Amino acid sequence: MNNILSSSTFFGLFLTLAAYVLAMGIKKRFKSGLINPLLIAIVLCIAVLLLLRIDYDTYNQGAKYISVLLTPATVCLAVPLYTQLEKLKNNFRAIMAGIISGVVTSLGSILLMGKVFGFSREEYVTFLPKSITTAIGMSVSEELGGYVAITVTVIILTGVFGNIICEAVLKLFSIRNRIAKGIAIGTASHAIGTSKAMEIGEIEGAMSSLSIVVSGILTVILASMFAGLY
Amino acid sequence: MKYLKQMLIIISVSLLGELLHRLLPLPVPASIYGIVGMFILLYTGLLKVDQIRETSSFLIEIMPVMFIPAAVGLISSWDVLKAHWLSYVTVTLVSTVLVMAVSGLVTQAVIGKGGRGNE
Image (cartoon, rainbow over all chains, first blue to last red; front, top):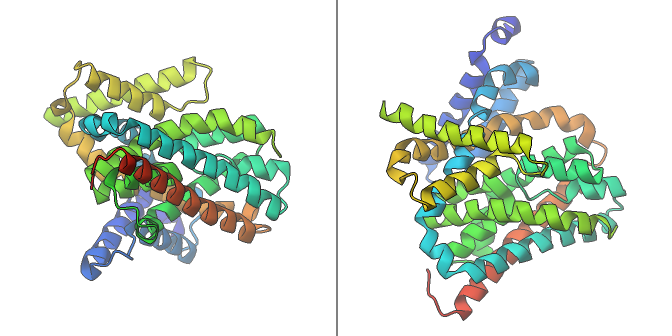
């Protein structure tokens, strides 16, 4: 069974798409904001792989073809950003203040908690780029001497977590302004969060997309300064 | 042909991003060069939104699916994580909530002060 599946390029692709479509179906059926299709799809895929004893590389042989689309999809985020340009211009100061404070909070909270949990210097710099997009985060971690594999894991965990809890967090802190919502989601949880912001609305999605770019660049600059503080 | 042309434009910008990533000695990934490049094309009017509308909407809509393979890959990083997983997960979760709250509240406060209601 395993061999037959391993030999098919389409297995990984099939499992990924089927899991997401099924998860969307569940969300529609129960009409609850608590149901996160991305999380359900991830859990379904992992469960199937563990149950059928299929290793990740076998799965990824097919699944990687969907990952390839990530760069073109990110490039397309420029469209909502351009459409919402007026909003960006009119609120430029607030948006920049929000992203900068978010980036400093990210680096500062890692510094503080790193001390509390007794992180080694390598562990500390591994976590510094956790809130930014994977490709930038990896190079920051590498540059500062972190464990790149752990950085990737933590970045993805941050994104998935942000995607799942953003609506609850925004509600808890009474963040109701649509621009502020987008900035919060994008600065905290990069592209994976942004895919959720896109579902919430076009303004939220556009602002979240902008945050990916700005917070990514800011983190590159500030992370090396923070690395010197530990 | 319409969708093929739209896809061609999007792939061209992605290719341009990848080339810039390889040629310039900066830690900027292809996707970031690409999003900035696409924004410049739209802003200068060299490209109209209509020329990529349907395909870009489709790609953005299915974006969550593209993160599934990487997230499923977390099962192979368990070996690296298992010794410290509790502290790693705690730090990740707490920091994510803090960043979200601070950046959202600051943005909202500054907008509020400017007197522009943008609900």
